[in-house]
Amino acid sequence: MPRPVWSGAVSFGLVTIPIKVMPATEDHSISFRQIHTADGGRIRNRKVCEIEDRVLDPDEIGRAYEASKDQLVAISDQELDDLPLPTAKAIDVEAFVDAERLDPIRFGKPYFLQADGAVAAKPYVLLREALQRSDKVAVAKFAWHNRERLGALRVVGDAIVLQVLHWPDEIRSAEGLAPRAVDISDSEVDEAMALMEAIGGTDISQYRDQYREAMEAVIEAKTAGEPPEMEAPAEPKGKVVDLMSALQDSVRAAKKSRGEDTGDEAEVHEISGRRPTPKKTAAKKTAAKKTSASGKKTAAAKKSSRKKPAS
Image (cartoon, rainbow, N blue to C red; front, top):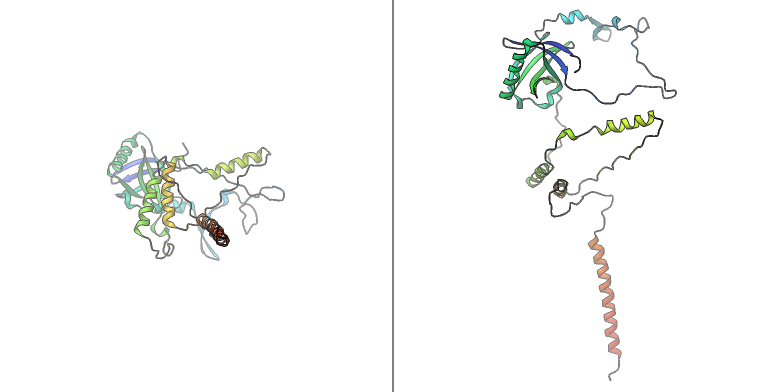
């Protein structure tokens, strides 16, 4: 397990649960270093004092609030530690609410809460069972990293998870982002729902970070001094001509991929630079030519028969 990022207690009413806070997720993305492209030399970020023009040691660096362009107000670690916050040493539960009342857009990073010592075992399990049976989450306030935060305590497996919540004023407005009034028929909505049903609910654990895998393959090849094998990205699909037809074709394709009998094949509806000539038109032209030629032969035959003398 990773190292705890914080230790304290969860408190609600007169109940106190000593806990350690452990990161619930980890970042597997590939990170890069900056280099000088001419010679491959590393570029380092150094913290230099503007007054003394020298690189500072970490213990020489403090923090300050920029009150104005020309005024910095220094704030010491001790002053931050002495702030009169009831949440400085505890995750203080403020309310218990139904899980569906929390909009997922407010969810931030999750953390596992580990019971700290034998004395914490019973109240920890008690809170976990109460949350699970009631289908509620505990909304709590806590102070980390020099700021007070809002969080939700919920159950994942056998553990209690603290999910950081964004404050309401941290959520940006979505006004003006959605398309303006669009005419959508009930049949189109029904077909979209049929597509959702046909695609079904797959297990999201099957998905992989293909970008990271491809990047790792490139790095491995270049480390070995070999040219990386690069595949051309897939071509984007064309724009939909007929939304309803595309939905119906998508439903058939989804069912076919799941082994269900659709009775016919799905078609692709795309916009190209120029509308292709239907095959039926070409066939009609051919048939017209044949008919015309046949008509000319018949007319010629009739004309010839009229010229023959009577026997």
